[in-house]
Length: 346
Image 1 (spheres, helix red, strand yellow):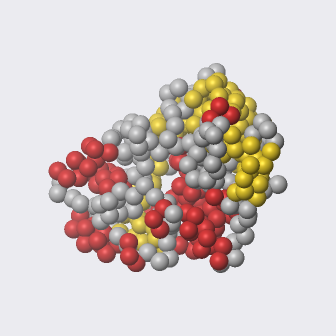
Image 2 (image 1 turned 135 degrees about the horizontal axis):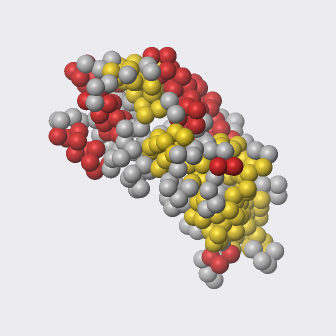
Image 3 (image 1 turned 90 degrees about the horizontal axis):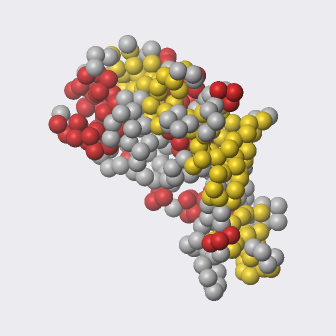
């Protein structure tokens, strides 16, 4: 099989490519430049001699303009609308399993990436997305918006691997990734300071909401002024800057009135939420009775009831949860880790 492997320059994608090669597949490395000004952190100069020595063809494609339009600009607009977007999920849908996937399929029979996720065959659902073995690194949540017909043409060599084992595997072969340091930041935001990045977009013409009232939940009275709803997110405690007799949390952003609603910790839990932009990976008629929902990456899926109707899903948590942030992803799982659906919280 001729497999095109998306290569970022890090350890995970390098392992994915070499693992497939060692298992007898013909592989091609495919690197996408997503940022127009990437000269200071460009792995390609280090990639070229590495893949030449390994006997692996390397292709480089420039997708920076599409990345700007389909990931960066929507990210900025969502913040202007007082939402908390998930750029990695948007990038996976539009770029890594969108445009880059299309390029990959021009050159190979299948597409592979270094995501910690699995594609496994379920007796009822058929080939389906499943959480990866390494629970701390599992990225199935970030893939929940990718259409299942695309994922079924993909390979995930890291499915059964843990991060520590991957580093040891590469080290045993004397291989160092072109980008050895693992980044946890949003790739297009320097220093992970998205407030500074948004301020720069403001100077370029992005209209961000200005100051407005801060309302104390339950008492319906204004206790302070906020600095723009885009600076806050639901569930936030640090950085509110409101002196009070007890810690306050951001409970809600009311976009129509430009109002931030805050309250003490006991006001945080919510019992339900809803999501749109649905991506149904499994027909709801086939879902098991018990399903689980994940509304943020650093959270285990929790029991919930889910109703799907007219392109939306309503989630009723079995026990109250910290308020989900509009713009983030709601991913539905079964108890075996298979992803049933994904949507954007609203």
